[in-house]
Image 1 (cartoon, rainbow, N blue to C red):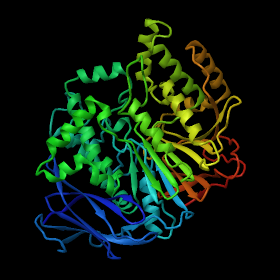
Image 2 (image 1 turned 45 degrees about the horizontal axis):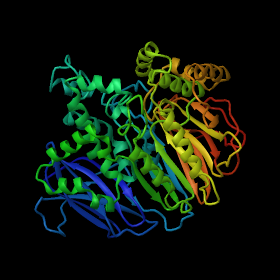
Image 3 (image 1 turned 135 degrees about the horizontal axis):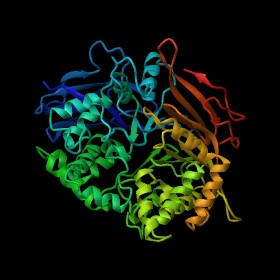
Image 4 (image 1 turned 30 degrees about the vertical axis):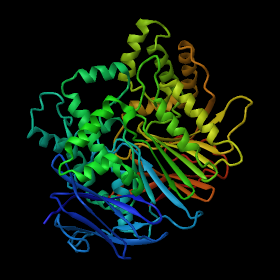
Length: 582
């Protein structure tokens, strides 16, 4: 009989249906059966010798929670056969995996936990984790230990789910058995098969495996899912494409992302309309079809859309691809190409008035510390030739070395997004909040913009909510640099850079109203009706050896304006609650 190799991952959930993703070790029929009678079945499909299924589960009732089981049948099994149960495993120490549907009431609270940058967890037998306790692992342990504890309704993973360019020693040993690590790409992954090792390492950790089986997840890539600084500039891309190992790397990255992450972001209706997915399920071996798709997406980014929109009752999530559809030519540099920009506009504005909260998932922050924002705009202007070719050459080197590639490094795109947010947030039918959810920068903070000038102002509360990392580290020198970037001297230095780069003043000014916080952490946004609350939880090791989630900040986002805090983990803004542990 076939066995379960990876998963199950609970991905899409609405009021009546869900999807469950698995990898098996042989071709089979995957069945999902719920205790309330809802069910689904799907035959596996094959890519590069691996067998996958994304099982739609139908017949669910709104606002209910039901345990489910995963069973595997022979590949030619008829409908209605039972199969052999592979999940939950026998004598599991975790609570039953459940599917909790969206509530029927539009005012019922919904919890969105989010973060980014999760490096592969240290094996459970290790005595010391060099980057500190994993926030996702710690959340899973807390929920498993206390089934009555409020859990997220949705988990938003905002990039760097795997690190293709920073493998663990355990993975490197496996790579060494396949090829010479003295040759490029060295200890980085080289192809699709090696990418699968990263997902095994990341998603097979017992606590996280259980968590992903019972909390729905939405995902988007960032650079480390492929390689650090992915699509930073035209010069970077030309150099990478000249490397003989790069083609297999980029194809393996896009193929594995499509299989492991992207498909689960789609609704059953979107899956049914997806031509590539239909081809993949019909072929005995879909490797060539997925490889061709990845090659086309790399050659012409407009041929694939990784961004997507999800509506959770009266909450709208728009997840933005900030990597694959960039325009890198210096004369027309943009974070999003024209088609992607038009899609984003429609996704944000269509049906406005029908949602109370708009969440924009962007792996890269829209609003950065002031000095970093100015430095990125200054660098972009110099790379485009504002101060001549010598400055341009030096600035390209600085751009790549210092990772100057956020929205601020694409000034036209920063302005366009700012204007689009203002449009979405203005008027009598505007949502209560517009929140940009981001990661990438290995610290957490809350920033609030204010529009300049005498024109119409947004009526929504607009906030930049940044949370990173889930499990990684940041040198003390960079921590000091981020703090300085928010400071008054940092803003003054930023103004000098903006003047040298001949930058126009942005349409918004912003202030930090929470953070910066450093550590492994998750933010949770709780939305109910037109109210919103935010909590920041950090994973911390206790003196006696245990690990706990510590709530270091709470605030109401839609009741009153935030006041600035002291900026450290224990800092507390007026009107916010005291830190708690849990």
